[in-house]
Length: 452
Length: 185
Image (cartoon, rainbow over all chains, first blue to last red; front, top):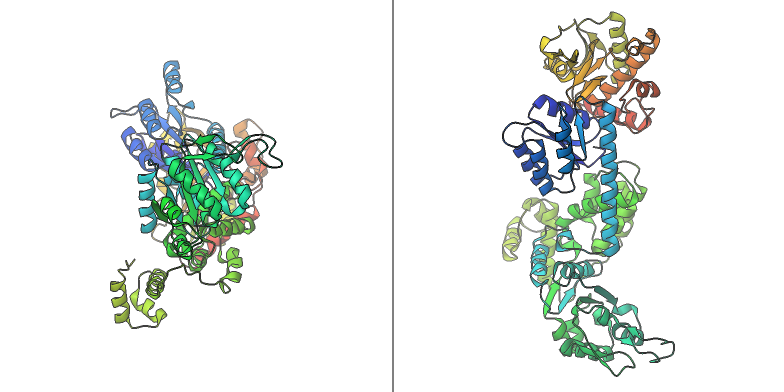
């Protein structure tokens, strides 16, 4: 299919619906047909249609205009064209008034319908592109924007939804590129603070003094160059959320200041005497093991407990390999629009390369890999060769073993990944792992590994 | 791989059938067999429009060579339509066995021009390639010169070549190779 847009043709006369569908399919569209209004409504619940051609006169309770109104309730964005054999001014006005884009009288000149379809699809493509760009610009992500079918991630999303409406501090842990900020944004935009700001600060990127004035703002004359009063990120996030990325990297002095804000929800601007009150929800993130930093004495334990009210641990991509096909398809779809490409799919060999890669840079690395492959791809399918650059780094990658990992964790992971690769075939997995089949069964049972 | 059958629906002059068969042979790289004409089913006629329902004629072709998995090209003088459109130059099963082309609207006489057999022949070749292209899974091409581009008017038919563009040609060859290696589609 050259277009991913779906079209619905609704007519009680199957000859009419089928012939129209066949004609549109020759143009490269995926077309469904429905023989009644009720059938059309049922289809609209489970599919997304760019446009619907609906016959005006249909028996069985729902005529074309009623069908259009019901479909539009489910898919307000769908463009509806009402078709009729006998046009009257009254029905034409009624159709347009209720939201039909056009009212056409059959038989139509093929050119008329072609132009109508092309025009609609062009607008749909622009709307889609606009939506993607807007989302990218505002980065207003919701929980449902996170692509996953991994059980741990599903639990995490469930937790995210539950805590979205609370004010409690959240600590998000995860390796670089796992999407900590995405989860933080999803918490913010799914909760009651969504209308206020989401302010992100990267604590690792700034020097101590700079970070202090960045977080708390400063008064005029507080330091050289402070020519005017400036609000800090905490004040900007009043009523909303402040996201402190790489919170494990902040200095002891700032740790004390941060603790005070968390406890009392009050602070002073740098060089200021007036106490500022804020109501900002704090979401912190780190790729470090804060508990260990506390043990080593480089991170305050009281701050750690204040931050760690709700902890979210995002698994690395190599521990949720089952998400790779979905994520890859998602990125291909989105980047196709952004880059103006028309790649339809990934070959099974290409997908295998992606499944076998270790992804030290996690989801961000996968996104970048898809983008690079799309840019150089010459056909409508991404092949193994398009991901040749991954092979170069594949042999040189080092294992990233998270802190506090036990030998049992590693063994469990090795068994899980091997079983995924063999699609659950224990005999094959045992051969790869070079252990007895009975030993493998025993370990599967012991580690409670779910088999595909 | 199945064979290629060329079937007239109603009366069609032999030289048009020969030309259509030669064009189909060249495109599909298989010998064509010319069959006897099929009678026009009276139910296909829409009396008010004085046109024939294209899908009914495709249905008529359905049993032809079915057991052999043959590719079938129907050729007719009848003016074709589907309910929503005023007319069709031809129709095919996308990725299927059946294709149908009509001579009615590719003759200059239809547009009140003097008869021009050479021009009609050229248009016939384009339409045969176009409809058979659909049976090879090709959808309409954005290149207006490619035989697979959409023609809604005779002007658009005349604007295109009787050959496929490089991209459609490559895809049609892939499809043919897949057919030759055993799978029918």
